[in-house]
Amino acid sequence: MAGGLVKYRHLSRDSSHRQALLRNLVTSLVKHEAIHTTWPKAKEAQRLAEKLITFAKRNNETSRRKATAILYTPHDLLPKLFGELRKRYLDRPGGYTRVLRTEPKSTYDQGASAVLQLVDGPKDLRFAMTAATVARDRALGRDSNALTRLNQAKVVRYRKDGDKAFNAMVRKMAELDLAGVKSGNRRKEREGEGEEGEMKKDEEEGEDGGKVEWEVENERGREQEKVERSIRRGGKAPRRSLITP
Image (cartoon, rainbow, N blue to C red):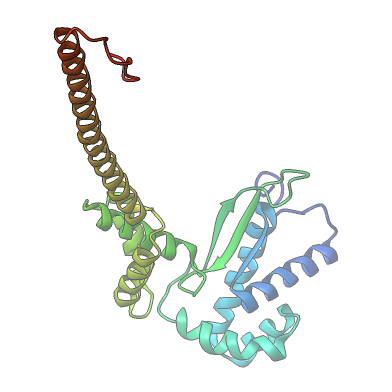
């Protein structure tokens, strides 16, 4: 790794292979604005990507030639680099990319993996994650903590119409209900309705059961009266009823 006696990561490759690898990664980054690779490759490609954005901000003939020497498909990506990306980072003093650690990309070697992305873009993970956190806090009716407020200030500082875009993302995350707040409330309501239905059913069954017992008792009383009248008249007792006390 970088540090100590070396100034950069060799990535287990010779010089030409290493440069080709980094150029390929940076080309994919400019094209897709986010790539998933190993942690050492992401950190080394980040250095080259920062230089490429700096060339775009200079916007002169020399910087165009240097950018053309880095990209594998300059005829497709130079208009985006010196157009959209240059305007996006024109007021930002630095830090055009971000590296976020992820779970190992390969389950075979379990190597450290990361996502390399351009900040303030459509695939900015920190922007989306911060908006989701704020949406959860608002749904739960509580204030965001200091770290969330700090991240919110970072993601909107240099973004064009940052506050407006952030509020729109918060509303979108609230509709998606990623924290499960709305679904949890609906589940509680269903459980409450189920408990009320069971209580009502038990009451109805209790009323029906009391009615049946009352009818059985009356039938027993009528049978007992018949037996007593027959004995007083000197006759035989009637056939025993099937209803037993």
